[in-house]
Amino acid sequence: MVPAGSVAVPVAGAEESSSVSDEISSVVRTAVDAVAKAGTTSAAGINDTLERAGRALARRVVTNASTRRHPLPDRSSLAKALSEKPPTPAIASAAAAAVGVKFLTRFKGLRVLAKRTPMWLLATAIPVLVASVTRGADELSMVSAHLIHRARSEGVEPDLDRVRRAAVQIVSHRIVDPDAEPSHGALAVQWLRRAVRAALPFTSGVATADPEGLAAAAADLDPHILAATSPAPPSRGGHRLGEPAPAPGSGDVQLEG
Image 1 (cartoon, helix red, strand yellow):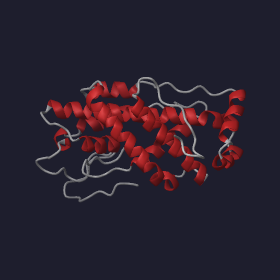
Image 2 (cartoon, rainbow, N blue to C red):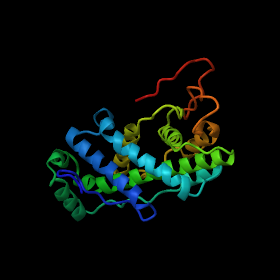
Image 3 (cartoon, one colour):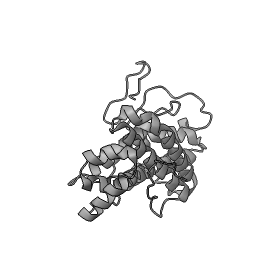
């Protein structure tokens, strides 16, 4: 049951299991409610709010990837899958925009947004956000399936929490360290910002940014550090997309919030 004052959202496509769809809907509801209360898409205002929903979605996606997804065994297959353009909701008509505004303004917290935002953008905001979060879940699933396959190919049974942390760090363009808990709220904000851009005309929709870079980061990860009990703890630092690895002995690297 959706709490009073919350926004009901459509579920994801048929290719997603009902449990993943439920978690996607939870992230979208939480994002819309948080933005409505804050009146902004500022990361500082909604990161913490989205953390719990984002973590629950990531855990569900990784669990499913461990048993249900094609493994995407190498860098090229992962990059190709990430490069495929996901479906993007069509820009709504003027009539649909009016319906969207009427729907959104039923919720007290969203009235300010409705007054300050163009009608066509409001009408497309929720379906585009669903598409962006769904694509984000798919990105996590693809990266996780790749990591799990590589670990098992090396005779390592991966710990799914370590896979989750690494996958979230990779798709967030952060340093990879399976011992460090990443910010799922920040990743959800990344999806929210992508949705805002996708709702505008002449954009690339919710397509994955830098699929080659994500695939390279995943393929470069030593799968042995994903084991439940690693023979040696992984070194701090690691791979940040677009930047060289830190020099040996440079110490811990502070992750961005």
